Length: 241
Image (tube, rainbow, N blue to C red; front, side, top):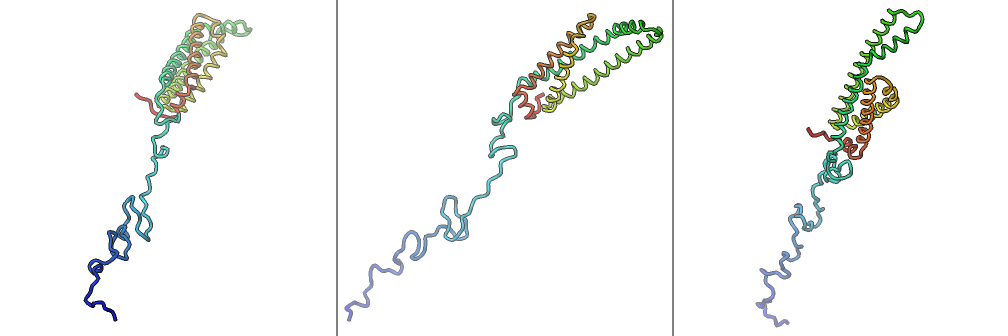
């Protein structure tokens, strides 16, 4: 028979203070990590049995950028390519070339009579050619010559305007078109430069202007092929006013 007093109570046991109670919660319960079904705060562990909540997907980089950074320039550096000094030089050379081309064409209009005199003397030496025939041919050739010069000036100035204003708009195709015109013009001048210096004073003056025109065209081509100028046109940035 036990000698234990039925009224005896264990002082270590208290119903209001169950064993194994701690700061984590009641006995037999896991510490709470957050409300069930609620996404955890950033940096806190996820609740048991719940898939981790991921953040919102990142925004895509802006068009024309790399990895969300500032756009690269044409030369591989960040930002846009600054306007090169050769760009303004190219515009100036275009105007100078147009002016020299017009000036070198004008003396031909004033030397038309001299050329007609040579043609009339050659025609007069032919048998069966009358004075009326010579006069008619001379008048026709003079009119045709002046008309062709005027038409060529109009077409040429129109092409210069096409190249110049699109160069100002930083159009790369205008740079390429200008290169083609400048090379063809220089080749045409050098092929007939000997004839221009073998005549009257007006023809010699025209030859000097034409030679200067060819030199300007060569400088124009060299400037257009410069790497900084080519990169500026490939970038296509409008020129400042």
